[in-house]
Amino acid sequence: MKTVAPTERKIFISPARPFSLPADTPTRRSRSWLWPFGWPITFGPNFATAPRRMAASQHSLPSPLQSENAMSSSTILVTGAAGFIGNSVTDALVRSGAGMVRAGVKSLQPHSGLPRLPVQTIHCDVMDRACLMSAMERVDVVINCIRDDAKTATTVEGTGRILECAAASGVSRLIQLSSVAVYGGATGTISEETRPVPPLSEYGAAKRAAEELCRSAAGEKLHVAVVRPSLVYGPHGEEWTARFIRAIASGRLAQLGVNCDGEANLIYVRDLAMLAARLAIHETPHYCVYNANGVEIPTFAEYFDLLSRAIGRGPFIPLAVQPALSAIRRQARRAGLYALTKQAGVARSIFPRSDTIAAVVRSVEKVAFERLGDLSADDFTKRRRYVIDRVKEIGFVPTTSLQEGIAASAEWAFAQGLVSTRAAPAEGVPPILQLH
Image (cartoon, rainbow, N blue to C red; front, side, top):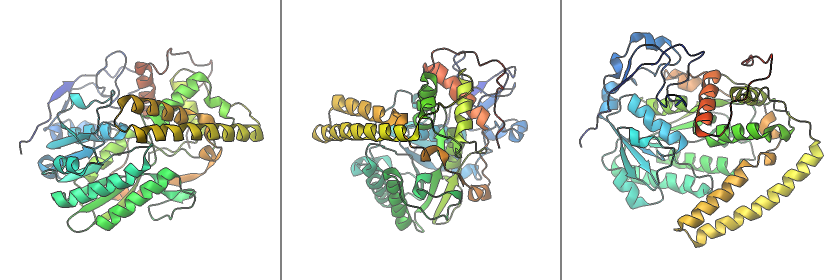
């Protein structure tokens, strides 16, 4: 099969900005790809010849993944490549010198940057065996980034179909994106060996079931590496970035009235993507599991405060709300939203191929998802920390600081119009909290 070489491009960025944003952040001024140094950086098959100075910086891309020959000669399929994480994984593979990258998409998302990448974009519906078999033809590695919040069955059944087709197609390695949700209510220091503590959310239970399928299918012919990321944030991220930025800007987040002193285990999307790319060629056991977490663990209060300051809204100050009244309102909203989402699900099953119905259902689900008042105090008060000693053993350490990740997220939010104006921060407010 013909190898598609990444297009080589050079970028000059002035170091005169007050601080540097991660390399994947489009600004409103330039809309270009930023790099925090004042010399030309070359992306493409000759990435290994980039200046040696880059290696010492937190902003640099990791050095070529252990075996450059293995990376450049492998054909890698990314399922869910149009999504938040899948898109970033696809980009990370290209930047790391992957020879042939196939971006498997069910439909191309509006924000997707795939058209600008030198990859083969193909239709890939994980619920369609024939479609999967075609997508996996002559593929060496599959990185599964599929996520469907509305259909947890897709997580389990889709993973099962991927494993079946991977075995039939001769795929040698699967990187399965799971979640720390599989640990349920566990607290304290959490390693890959920590047993789940009930109750598990529906999403966590589905991810756990998908992991068990992977464990059963793993063997000498198919190695499986499961990655359990913590809370993934960054540009284009909805769950832990965009919805909280909107809620801060509107004042709704402050109305939660909860003590946000729990630990916010956050990982920047680019760091997670580079870990997935590294595992695509790194020698691993037949089956292994890796936690993925960031370099700094703030409290949720500190995270919200940094977001608030980054978008020019000053410090984050939760309003005092009576716990009993808040709980009653939350249960009433949950009952109403449950009925609403159930009706949406019925409509989806009756008209599975209707784009109009699908759009309506997505709108309903988005409304349900964004009702921050339905989050309980437990969501923000638990003290737990996911350790990443195992990924460090394979030479990987996340490099994006919280300040850099939040700055990138804020710039993206302004560029996308999520925040209409850049309000001036309150007088005397420091630019960033001291994180522990």
